[in-house]
Image (cartoon, rainbow, N blue to C red; front, side):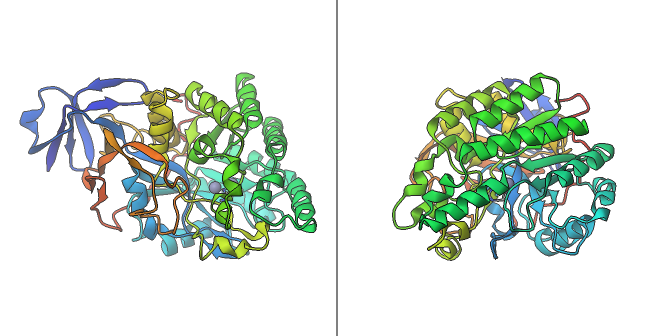
Length: 465
Ligand code: URP
Ligand code: ZN
Ligand code: ZN
């Protein structure tokens, strides 16, 4: 079966033009004019922007955190209606289990037959043993070219020390694996949290007090320095402060292969959300914490200028009533993370493109093309080009509405952006040539996603970035 997407404005990471896209089976086979004779049918995309399907490199489906678990892949249709056709999810490492086995188990138990979009993985280090580092080449062979280490969450299996980070960087470099880092100083946070609790400062707003910008900046600079000593590339996820962003920018300018991501919530929300009454502030407990508007504006500047390369959602489907309330009397017990896989493109479009802070090409790069490259999925994913998977979003820029939990597919009882305006929406979404969203509604199969294996070092280090 073939079809032609006609008269849309195609947006890529480098250009924008009106042309028709011929899809045959799962692939884009031609782009241009005069293709009508080669198609069985056509779809009119007049007035639409045709974007590559989004690649969200930062989702946490079925993440264990603070004694509870985020919603799993059964809620991944939310990604599709948000214009994301590929997610790269974090695989937790159960205690006593190796990294490769953790990945196999996670795929079998959590993802296979449950994903509505295509999926790839990052490995997460949570149980450090000497043999752990020997497993890194095998991880790369299994199509996992990225690993995340946490410098925060003291007292949980997540937090690693500097020597672990250093050893991981050395081993990863040899295997073509990119180390991703959650950069916050877990020791300082631990002291600050204990001070707050001792002073009976237990409400959600003290989450931000115990995680000030400096704890992120310090850890970011330390991670960059450790990577420098290891002479290894490093990727800092969910950057929220202007100082951390500047450190990444400066290190890159000085020739170090360092890269960074920020998230829609750091671009559109701020720290005041944590002070909402009646425990509503708990909805906004994520780490790093939300910041003041000066950080937000610096982050917009950074993504437009390429000082940060990716926007990932850091999607965590925790329910407010059922799960966030675990920290009703102690903010340190609120599970960290907020839902957002559904809203990533809409936030970037509404508060970036529509407000003149982001070009459409930069949006495409940040939400699809660069994450595909960093995760070794480019040019199959994140790209409109001949031979690429026909993952396409027909974005209607005239649609106007609000972001809300009503009708949300994220499977939780709140929306991080409740009541905020939204301009435009993915009207139709195709996954490998199959229409999975129509009129903004999910019409696909809940198990149609396939497992993707990433190439070592992605494309970030072979000259295409
Ligand atoms: O608050 C967050 N971000 N929770 C998810 C785990 C992580 O740190 O990415
Ligand atoms: Zn993190
Ligand atoms: Zn995360």
